[in-house]
Length: 504
Image (cartoon, rainbow, N blue to C red; front, top):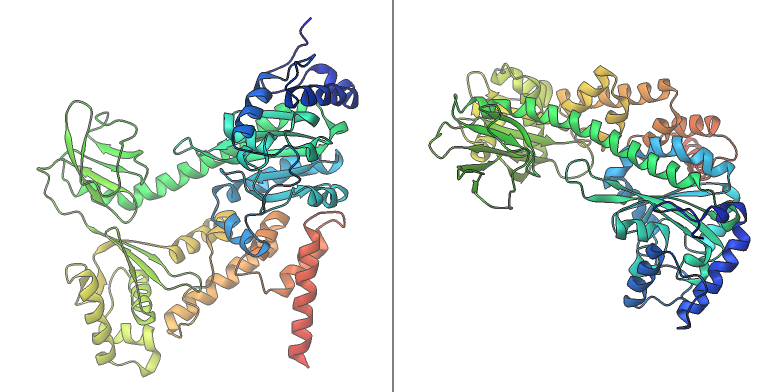
């Protein structure tokens, strides 16, 4: 009689006696790889994965997965990955369970590279021995059948137990994984996995991991909706400039944000990079105009010029960058300072006042006029107006977004969006004042919030990395057995030593 099983799970007997079931799987494994008929064939999902893995020349006697990224690269990869935004949710949902049940939680990117790991401290050493640590690649082509690689291959929750792994090293392990999808494109972003010793197998883990992946996707969907609305509001002047002619705002991936007339547009438009025309259903041709973010679609006869769009990215140690009407432009420090001040005063400034805000009492009209001339050469006299000096454009900036998020209490967005101080090498009075305001307000808000995950994210970022008080507070709040406390204590002690040496 066939034993009951779900799409991704194991026979019910696996949870009742996982060790005995692993012996049956081992017999099946040896028979299949020895080209002998097995008494009990592998599950179809396992058999198909073995075939894919063997076709990729994975050696069943291979010991561990390849290490693709070093420890010094992981922080940057995490910060750039979309799943970084849902890690507090994943930790809150799975880590406490993993810790109690002797599991580790693993999160990969779409290619199977482990980027995050948390869980039972006693198991982490054993996990290190078999390559279950950040930087290793767990795709089927790299290390054969495993829950992370197979869930990415079949785009469905998967449970792999004991000798269902193609590589013998992992026959003492059981694991469950589920994919997480991009709410914008539907593409797989990565996998969430729970792994542990084979005796920890439990049928409920499939449902738990699958439900957690759905929660993560829901949170990403909410964040996307918020970002969409902000983008729509910032770019509505472009649509309004068409003055009743048919037009639409779409995201960089082609999703519709707003359109006139209502109900005339598809939910998504297929756009190819560099294309200047697109044909809609029904044979309607539209001109594609790149904006600072996304695109404006308009009828060819709609010739009204859309207002200029400027996006400023001035936080952090990198080169200050402006996106002007879809074009990336690297700026000098002086031009970045000038744009910062003008963006903070949309009503306009006299030359004298602009000089004071940029250069203090030492500023003079000639210096201001020189920088104005250089900026007008970049963006045009129709965008940089005079009498008073002002920007005639839709302006978006990372520092204005950070300021708004602090004002409205969106601390998680503020911490994740803050890539560093505003123009850190600038001595312009207006820039220096805003920079100090943002740094002080963000730090105080995070310390007062009482959210350990938020505080940890802040400590890992540029604003908190060298902050001794932040690390002291984290060391106080994290439990002794928390797997995240080791790096915190190491960094705290290093900062203490630096502070002591500097005081000597």
